[in-house]
Image 1 (cartoon, rainbow over the protein chains, first blue to last red):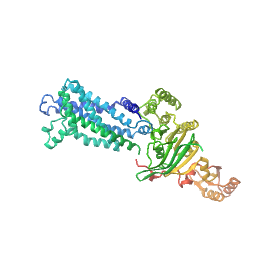
Image 2 (cartoon, rainbow over the protein chains, first blue to last red):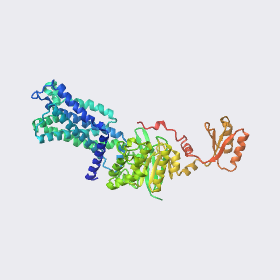
Image 3 (cartoon, each protein chain N blue to C red):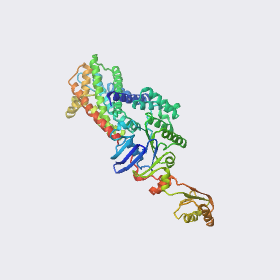
Image 4 (cartoon, one colour):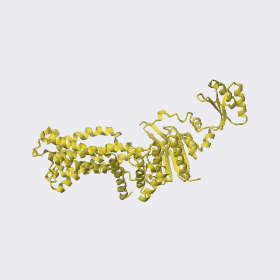
Length: 259
Length: 324
């Protein structure tokens, strides 16, 4: 198995997923309509009630980094549900019986989800501009912010691959995602300043958990055009899970599909 | 002795407490059709999944075209195609897209991929439906496309897991023609089935399996001979006389008869056909039984199964159902 073959097989799988999206565009609702709703809800409804020191008049600019990362995190872990659905399909047996690179099936899934995340960011960015998002004009910083978010989402996708292969049903995964990821996105620096809004012990956690680090780094980049103190930790919280969960995901998938 | 293109030796596989395979041996010579016959839950699908690298056995050996499927799954995967009861196709892709994707994953050159896909679509009468998504296909069309997918590489060995289960009679006949055509072209075929008629008609060699082991092996004729020679079959006009008919025929045969009340039919095995017919008619007549039909026939594979296992082939074994 050469690298070229691996890339070709993986591209074949991405292409298949893109045809699926083309033929059932409703598969994209979670990365188009939902993020728009979130941007509008938080900036127009809650925005007036939430006070962030230094952002009294520009809550939307503060908010956007939070919504970006939250949406990408959901899109990332949602890979597990999509994969669990793939696994119920007889097509996986066909792929298994072909002399192709088996990990390409998973790469195809996670790379497609990366495109989904990119689409979500693009839509939110534009909608954000209408409701008061004022990013820095530093292009490098903006690109770095998007790159960091996508990398974090890609790592979560691979955690999703492992979870999707280990858990029996997509329904169970929905439950786990709701119980774990949902609180994590809110007990964070996404929407509020934890030091003001939360009890001390919770604020301590909220300020240090990985999602907050990625949000803070994104915020520093998009608003100030700076690589802030959270950037390196955020990068590590993306690269390390990716390196760990890639082989784990492939292993779990192989185990699941050769029973 | 011709080379075995498909070989399974002592396959064992358990799923929790369910022993799907308990020392299964199979082999098929080049260019022949091996029919693997058994009721639901006998282990047929598990055997196919092991031979096609989809499942790892707990013990045993498996080779396809001489390649060890456990040691070299990737090399083995270039030697066979597989089509199953549940067509492994992408519903959202068109028939042509499905075949071309599989061709590219087999790493065929792109011009070959297009040509081969067109040929197969034509051969399986799917040209008109080639650019429709598989979602819109009928059951028979899916099976044909699935078989087409298995043939993209022109592999020397084809595995077919219950290729006609769920098809209407017309679909079944056209699938039978396709399968017979494959073997004629030199492809070695392993086909599982619950239909005795199907195995009888297509297979050069039949392995009857039950509870994960082969319980009988041979050509359809050899298996039939195992169960004894000819049968005398009588259909009478009034079911009230079935006991009399049975007594009369058992006297002639010396063995116990099988009575089918619904069809008003009595069947007994007989050692020799000499003078039997006249004697039977005389005996039945003197017992006051009116005969609608009488004649000799060879045993069916249903009777073969009954004779070997002590129960009819159709009867699914409840305890063997693999939990969903």
